[in-house]
Length: 363
Image (cartoon, rainbow, N blue to C red; front, side, top):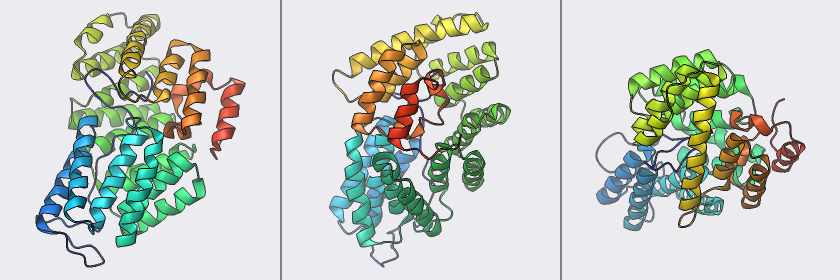
């Protein structure tokens, strides 16, 4: 199944979800926070900021929206609260990267991060947001890496920074570096199902399928209801040719997403033919959901492109990728590495698109 699935009926999110680990500059107590510039946030602003972080950590579209509202309220209560501005930058970046907001929203990310740094230039959160802006919207790889490194230097125990720096390495196919960074993130936050899942996804993209399956099973033990874990586990089983196991993982995914009809429609044929036939039906229904959703909400053209790839409709897939390029869709930076694009990778148009995006990837 396509790796980027964000708009199922149940509102489940696929791809990159983000559990916030505490950064070095954050207080762990319940009282007001003091930034490194000695600004003391009001108690009310601080409590709003804490609520924003809590919702951000849950990584669903609904929680992202609530997180953003809390961060904005914190800024309204205390415009000099650098961390609240950085929180806004981080959640806006996550929502835009995951296709929930149009790519132009990255300009708001830049504004919020720059405001935070003008108030306190030692915030790793804000440097992380600038790294994501440079990477996902400007496609400026060297500038992005400098900001990632600055963020880590300032917040060396923030698992989320390691996670996104790992993604930066992963999309360049720098597999060993990506895995090392992601394993460090997991070492810092071993109870996070989100971080554990991201480590499994890193193994999966790197082609280390046994490690991926082992990690997804650990993640499943942490949170059996985490639908995306079952989604990625199914992808790993498919990569190994274990279609019966993939079918069961997919069925579990759908049930946890509340998609009971889709789960039943998969049937019981665990052969390769049975699995692929069932998934073609799923993708056809999902395409209808995307088309309906796009009438009233923003849907990234990458979403459509990935479904068309899965359905074998190459012409429409490239039409949507061209539209995504016109929008500067963030997920285009993953073209070189994301296995979901493998079916069209040999097409000359794909090679041309990689060149236009300018991904410095290892072959």
